[in-house]
Amino acid sequence: MNSRAAKDLEKLNDEELVRLAGNGGEEAFTQLVHRHTPMVQRLAARYRGPWLDAEDLAQEGLLGLFAAVRSYRPDKGASFATYAAVCVRHRMLSAAQRAGSLRNI
Image (cartoon, rainbow, N blue to C red; front, side, top):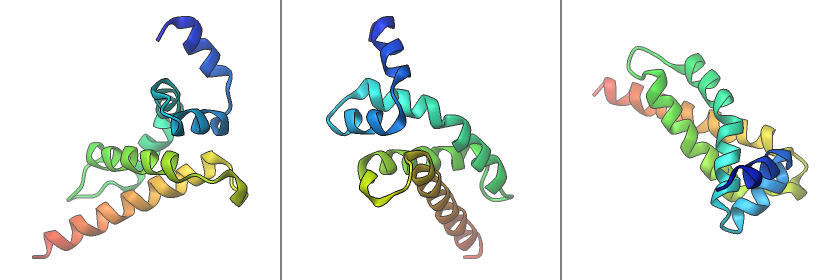
């Protein structure tokens, strides 16, 4: 992607980027990941534990972000940022729960 196209994508809001990413726009998806990575990292640091480190949780969070891009419905009333944070948090909590359960086996 050239720098002009990247600058153009930076100007779009999340909902516009999600629409483009849903239509196969890899650059739009990359922009969303770049924009929301700090949130993923903050949540990963918050939910890390003795049996699951922040890096593993961040990977789970990125999978949650990917799922959010694929399943976001703007007509449901939530902003993409809010919806993505919920998807990321749920994915991380599920991973932490699985890790805790496996630790007890």
